[in-house]
Image: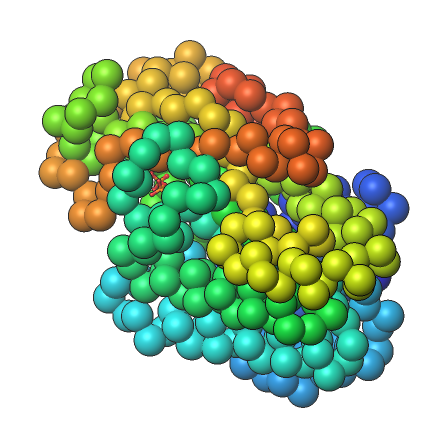
Length: 345
Ligand code: UDP
């Protein structure tokens, strides 16, 4: 059985669905602060928070957990700058609660939901896992702190993990059972779709004077179902390699570059490898929704790098992963289907 923390959230719920399709049993732990009960369609559910060590303990007592997939975290970059302690507490300290409880319960397989924010302002594009870690926000820093802890654990104990660094998660379940539904939406695609359905007047373009082809920021949009398939491949990777890796731990201990921790533990970027500008995303949304999207160029948002594009070759080579939603239209189509359903249209 797999424990999914944050399994009622956007990404966690898509992974939960995919795990069930692939025959896994799951239990979700979620405090429902940002997740939705309506996304809890598969497996068991325990309402609770990772600051509560007793709840974690009781889950490990009550269920036969083989591995943990950890999504529960605060994710607003802007909020993290305003309230850093909140982020270190929830994203780092509470993860330590989970890891300590796993150790006590002899559970040693872990998949971590990480982010491209660990790289900060990129020094080279596309960004590979070897790019220096230089987070510029408490959100990114809290994720690096967890990754560093994981690397130490993997090098000192019988513990395997994969840390998956997402670029711009987007799209929705093509069967339209679940999708993106944030309380205070800040992400580009759902905000544009809000304009299409008349919920918002216009989309603000955060700056059009960047050094890019049309002056707007370029991002690597990766479909949430492609993230889901990568998680399952990462889980299989640590499951398949953990039996015969014991004898290799000593050898791999020496390799402590945080990016290639051992044969079984590893760090992977997850992106499409294609960049799309804000204007191109708006064009794609106009094309799919058949609506004119009103737009206004405003000041750039603090801390937004001009270009973020992933080099995900490592995930393709090691995990044998290949994104299926490899163009923007496919991504926006599923987001649009979901957005209409969410808004009863
Ligand atoms: N963006 C924008 N207007 C918005 C929201 C986002 O121009 O209302 C831009 C943002 O500057 C970035 C891209 O769209 O270049 C994607 O932003 P999002 O918040 O979706 O994801 P992020 O890249 O910040 O993780």
